[in-house]
Structures are given as structure tokens and as C-alpha cells.
Length: 550
Image 1 (spheres, helix red, strand yellow):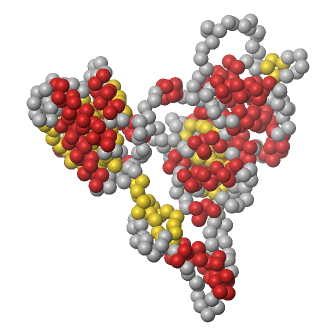
Image 2 (image 1 turned 90 degrees about the vertical axis):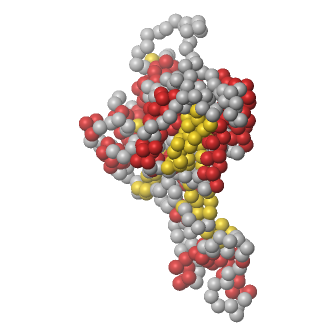
């Protein structure tokens, strides 16, 4: 089954029973193929509602219609987007969805009111959808790598209503639920929704092909669409287990009591066929940073002057935040009848201190990547070239990710800030045109300069991350003396200071054989440690991007 056929089949099954399947996740960037797929989804006979990942609570849940309420002198509510007849919600940039939107959409889907959603996953690297949405979407498909040549016109069945009824009357052999649950456990799928979705998908697929009973083909398609993207591991090989006599494996086997018997291997092969080629490496690698809180751009900061508006909150007169007049009136309107009866001499709205609502905004602080590069020894020029290439590659995405970069080189007796924080690619190339190298390894001085720059950036509202490229063989102490033992102790002291300051860090070991002392230094900073012998600029850039996204 081609990726396009797999995608359209998932959409067709969703159209047959949107209430049972809840949603479909589409992994795709903006492209003609994605546009063609979205046009096909428009054929699902439900009202289509487009959501924004940062919609406010008032838009989702409804709010007081202020102008109508003031005119009519009675409370009039506006209807929220989620408080409507069964609809098909389209959520672009779902990986950036606000937690409130995610929670409310999940709650709406759980209510069983016939709603369904299509989430567009446009994330980069390790960005992913919120788990609550991923769990509630029965299907996941990918359109990455498809071209218009792969596109084929798709027509949804005309008898969707009848197919929905037929699907719910397809017979389920007694063994199928147990097989699906066992397979889900073997694949490391914790969700209890997955086996239910797979069983319903098998029923819908059988109804689509005018079958009254689930067959092996229906189950294979179901586990392909429902289990493959949820798998967190593959079952261990069973070579050491005693082999059972094998019976001929036909497409479907029926035993004497007319129940379906499908080998687990057949279902497992269907899952493996749908897994991306590198999925096992991704599942096996654990590059999540200890204590890391950053994601995407910098940390979230709340304020009362600028940024993305947040729902207003109650606040006293002593609060210096600006009053949100509209939100204050909305809070006061439901009590006007009671207040007028208590104070008949008053005219106009009666506002109490408890009605005051203050404006709130949220901004993402810019993130600063501080490249701290070991420029000592004979391999200095190679390491500096790697750092230069990595900085330039990361800068190409700086505008989209709001990243700034800085470069610190340490060699000889001290460290030097070669490139102050910048997002200018032209300035970077000019500063990196000629970099000095050679001499001792003042690792502690390099870390001290990086910590100082990180603290300065923090005072300016930026979130700093130190990226250290070194072989870890410190031999110059902070006082400038050539003392390897003291140099190591000084480096550990500064590493503990970096941890105390709450500065994120990433340590890239460039030695041929991983240096144990450098791994210990990374642990002291709670930094992610990556061994990249003979790393080039592309690998360094990829390692930094993957670590910061985790």
C-alpha cells in the first residue's frame, strides 16, 4: 500500500465513523500534496471549523455578548466554537497548540457528541503533538516526501450513512479483542484506546468491502493504521523459545467453531511495514536532557504590557497591571439585577472591586546559544571549522526559532568572546573569517566566560544555553598555572556554578575515544553529553538541534 493510498484509506475510514475514530493526525509541511489531501477531507459531510493553536477560552467556550447584553439589559451569551453541532475541526500547527485548547478539545471529543478533528503536524525534528491529542486520534499518516506525481483523485463513498450502520454490525470473532490487546502490550502501547480503535477500524474496513465478518486483511489494515505510530518497542525475537509446529498460513484460517485465527506474526509484520526506517534508532536513543525545561524558543514569560494576550485574571486595585475593561464588564454583568435591587439609586453598571480584571500577556524570551569551543592543540583548526560551520547552519534557522548565537574560544591561558550575541549571518561570517588556535586548554576559563555571558543574557530577558565543544583535557588552571589537577578541579567548580545558576548546557566530546572526565563534568552541570568523534559541522548542528528540541 503506497503512502497516498494509506492516507486516503485512513481518511475514508474516519469519514465512515467520525464519532468512533475521533481524529486523524497528518504529518506534512505545506505542499501541493497536503493541499490536495485537505481538499479531499472537505468532502466529509460535516461542518468544517478551522481552529488556531492559540485560541482563547472565550472563543472556544463562548462568552457574554457585551454589546447585546447592554442593549437588552439581560444576559446574552455567545456560542463557543466547541459548543456546536457535530463538527470536523481542522487544527494546523497542532504541535504548537495551547494547553487549554488541547484540554478543551480532548474534553469535547470525550463527550461523544459526534465531533472529529484533523490535526496537521508541521513540527521539526523532535517536535510532536500533545499526548492527549495523539491518544485520541485513531489514525496517523505521513505525506512527507510525496510529490504531485503520487497524487490520485479520491472519491469518498456516497453511502457513508449506510456504511456507518453496517460497520457497527460487522461480526467480531471472539479471539480478535484478545489478539489486539496482546499485540498492543507487546508493542509497548499503554493506551487502552488503541485496541478499541483497531477493532473499529477492522469493522469499518470490512463494511467498506461489503463483508459481514472481520478477516485477516481487515485486521492487518487496522493495526497498520492504528498501532504502527503508537509503538514504542518491537517484541523480542522468539528464537530461544521452543518452536511450535507450524500450520500452513493461509490468508485466513477458520477453526471448527467458525472463529477467526490469525497468527500474531502476521499482525506484527503489518506494523513493521508501516514503521519509518529509522524508528528503532529513535526509540532506542534517549537524548532527553536532565532538568531541561526549554523547548523551541526561550522560556515563557508573563507580563502586562506586550506579547500574546492571555485570559484576564482578577486583581485588586493595588495590582499595577492594566485593567481589562471588557473582561471587567463581563464579570460584573451577571450580578447587575441583584445590585440594582440593593442600590436602586445607582445608574449604569455597578462595578465592585471583585469584578476588576487585569490584562495579561505572554512572550517567549529569545534563546542564546553560547558556543564555547576548545581552540587548543593541534586539532584546533578542525574544531574551529566545525564550530564555524555549525554556527552558520544554526543561524540560517535563527529567525524562525528566535535564536541568537555567540562564540567563545578558549586556548593558551584564557578565553575570549569572539562573537557577541547576534542573529546577523553577515556579521558572523566576518567575525569567523580567521580564528586563532593552539596552546593550552583553559577549560575553566572558557566555562567562566560562558557563564558570565549567560548571566548577562538572562538579565536582558534571554534564555541561554551553553554548547561546549572540547576534548576535556584541561591543563591550565584559572590562575594561569599549568597544573592539570588544579585545572580539572577549577572546571568542576565552574560546572557546579553553572548548575546553580540554572543555565542549560550541552557538552560535545570531540575526542576519538569518549573522555570519562568530560562525561563526569557534563553530569555535574546536568548537561546532555554527546560523543561526536571527528564531527563535522552538519553533525554538530544536528546534535545541537536535537538536544535543544528534546
